[in-house]
Image (cartoon, rainbow, N blue to C red):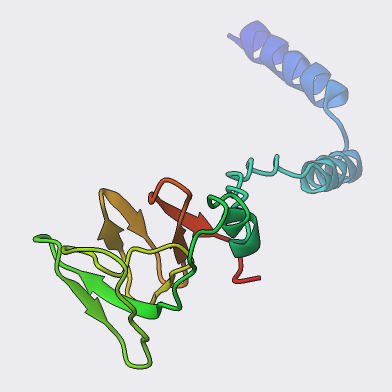
Amino acid sequence: MNKFISALFVIMILISACAPSPETLAKQTAAAAAATAAVKPPTPAKTPTPAYPTYSEVVSTYPAGAKLYTTDAKVASVSSDGSWSFAGGSTMNSCGADPMPWKCYGAKFTITGNNVTIEGVTYQSGAMLTVDKDFNWVQVSSWK
């Protein structure tokens, strides 16, 4: 049994002789922590923002001689049955028939409510809409 204990003691001495010193271990740990901190995680890819045309760019596509109407409205909400609600300061000029007699060349609509859905497309507050040459709603980047 003494031989067994002696052999274990010799093995433990050999293992401890091969292990790094506490100073070396501390340096290695600090270096590993610094290397890990220096590695930056990848930047998540940004979802591209659609490039909307300006109001002038849309108006330039209207047919020659098209009359521009001066509707300038703030859209607060559109109900599920298609009824529109406008905020104060809206100027409405009719050019067409119901249900949207203000859907005219040159009309300017600014969404003031959140999640306003018009003809199946949902717009956030601040979205600016006009109609294109085919009377489809189109979002613009500015009123210029």
